[in-house]
Length: 139
Image 1: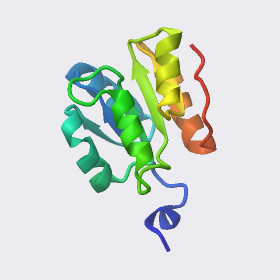
Image 2: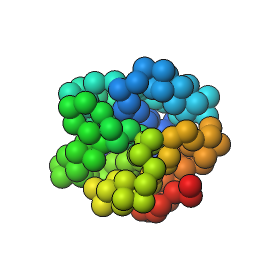
Image 3: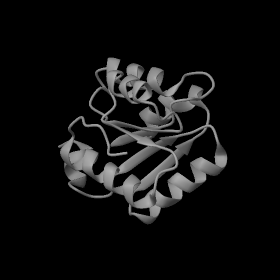
Image 4: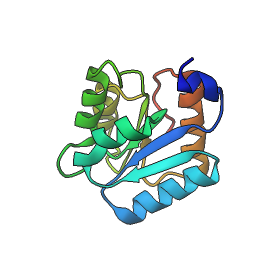
């Protein structure tokens, strides 16, 4: 039996990627308070190592970051058989329709605009984890 099957609907693991420490701390705190197991990473060069170690059920990432940007992270994760099924949610200050389209085109399940309310963040994460369907989040 796989580890995830043993865990059933237990605590879901979320990897949060953002290069701004205050934002990273805020988002990880909100998600922990909502009952998720959360790991934050601020350096994109560490993302793949953290994904392999932490085995997240979902990756929440900013779009604009030094090194790999969020769309490149998404495309990379979706291109590998061992990570292709991990849903990805963008949380970005880039709020134009073209930015949303880029995020969803690169394989994301949802796109949230910064700033986001705690309720919208948690609701979207739960929705993506529960349904696993691609959709554009309400703005």
